[in-house]
Image 1: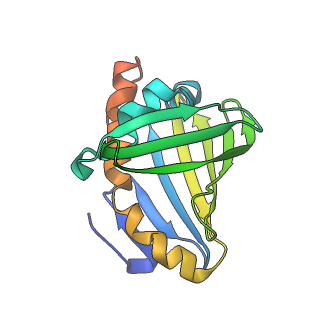
Image 2: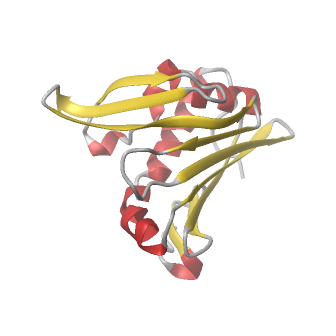
Amino acid sequence: MDNRQENDVVVSDGRTIVKRTSEREITVTRTFNAPARIVFEAWTNAGLFAQWWVPKSLGVPLRSCQMDVRTGGTYRLEFGQDAENTWAFFGKYIEVVVPERIVWTNEEGENEAISTVTFMEHDGKTLLTFSEVHPSKEALDESLGGMEGTPEQFAQLDELLITLGAGGGSAR
């Protein structure tokens, strides 16, 4: 299914829905066939996070992944083909509630978003909701292209969850 730009949906693969929810906010939802504690672990353990976060089709390796996931902790993710051609995402964790919620800053520039991910478990499945609030409509407009890979990222997370003992597969 591809209903891009229809009803404010930016991109969807039928399981991961990326939707513009306001002029400055975008929200991504997907249900995983795994308990919240396992999905939370895959999001907060640097070794696990590095296995799923970069869409494989991007063809750019994650060179380093440093995460101190606690309120007041920091993160830094560096990408690139070699040491001379890298870029980084970095910021700090504003709020961490295990295994329910993480809020963090993105400090790469002056128009960066505040990101929030929540993990709501029901019957052994987890509804993951990721949102970004940008300082302006223009800042969100500029970042929308980066959301194209989100369904692939979350499919990679689904595959990892299976290796961690979760049910994986279709969870609608």
